[in-house]
Length: 299
Image (cartoon, rainbow, N blue to C red):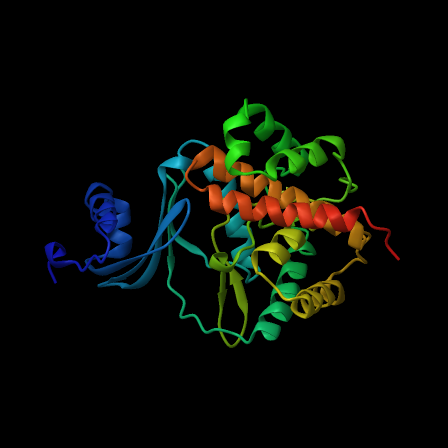
């Protein structure tokens, strides 16, 4: 089928045609494009693309990420994860512009409890793999840089009322978890970055991957998956059962990290897309609830 007849439900998919036309290596990998369906995303645009050479996922970074991420480290880390069966191997990767292509995998939904268990198992496998990822993710340093870069927050607080309380908390309680233990981490364990089928769960979009404290991935996953209390317990139990070393962190440590994850997510939204006030407000409100739990004594 001629490329001019490509089916594009969203006109933004035309970017893929332009990329293919300008990049001989990408064109050689994809072949003739038959159809390309864009998927929703906050920062990246992902196209499920059918071509003369098969089906692919094609990721095109959004403008808010231009020049802000280490694409060479991402490619390195993703390649290591693919070697142990935790990521789809890249068939094309351009660190300069962030375009990434993998073979498409058919996805099958798992029951919520089965998903929670498999996620815990796979995350423990990553953390216990001893892979040497490039990069270092320190949430306290990220928060400090975000707060400094935000400047005056008067107009923002009017739309995100809980932000002041969250920022006061994180500024007064930096370093709640021992940062001596660093493990290879995905950095963005969210529903859109997990592919499941009847056999396993794989992680995609490794752009925030780095060496980090294991609680970063654990807390972020627990928040972003919107687990019920019982599902979160299944996830945590599965992770602890599968981890190669006993987890040294406590429930209180986990809550501290949850607050930091939500604070970072909220500030990211305000930095990169200032119309995402609802997104930021929801995360700040959840952080305030966890701060309230931290103010109560633990058994």
